[in-house]
Length: 383
Image 1 (cartoon, one colour):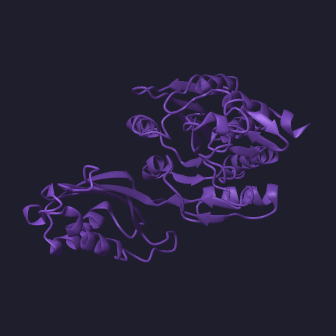
Image 2 (spheres, one colour):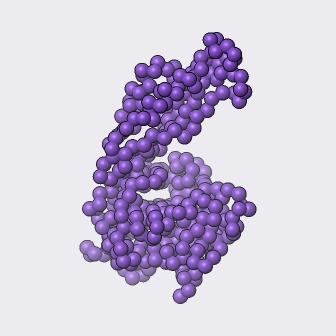
């Protein structure tokens, strides 16, 4: 069969032609639910606010293997700068071009086709298969996966293994899988001064001048050296704002936004305490607000899910992946605290959130095959 005419590619194109910019699913999950219903999955729509979520399960016994993903995509940016319309899902040689092609509707199509094949080959398989799909991953992520997990926990429905289809591959398909993510802690620091005329500095109090030595000290701290799973904790200033826009006005306050990407060597509380201890000697008049986006998590290399995935990649692609905890956050941060083994494994990530996002057709067909063998390794090898 031509690589562009496989069930995986046709299904991916169907999903990609829907302009489901976060948080509007626009019917993607209906397509997924209808497909899974034919495979004897029990579908539950779980809307929260303006977010659409789908929980779908086949089977009632453990272990429960879950495919997790999102149907929402980021905005396209200037449409006129795309080679093809971003929701046309055009095929250009071996590439499928569309917003969401890599991140991550195509992986959802791979989930679905792999599951259909597995169910047809093993209709009486032990354990259960679940799909957790949200339209709130690219947005605030407050009414999506986290709410579904809360619902499942309330009724004691426990996930054993969760594969998130985020684009984890670096140079070639399956060369890297994410077995964890760093935590993310955001801060907004406001340093107060007194506004005044540039010509009369004695009548003002410039917060920029006061802040610079403190910020230099803050950014010079070595927070930790990382560990076997994580690189060192990093603090990065993302925004500095002060002034009225006029050249002759000393600003009344300075606002600094920064972010910690932190390892399991730290907690949010220890980082907050470290910042306050660093600022204390400078006698600043300041306020600081904090927002925790997610805690760090890691799935040990010896876990069943990593072994099953590594074996499937080796079987289908001929090599084994490396493990990584680099990159941003994902919805895995909401699932890992339940005790589930969680990894991210999907297509190449080189075009995500960019103009002309695209993914290889041949990679998607191979990825479908790998997902199929992961199901075999998790559910059938012990049967």
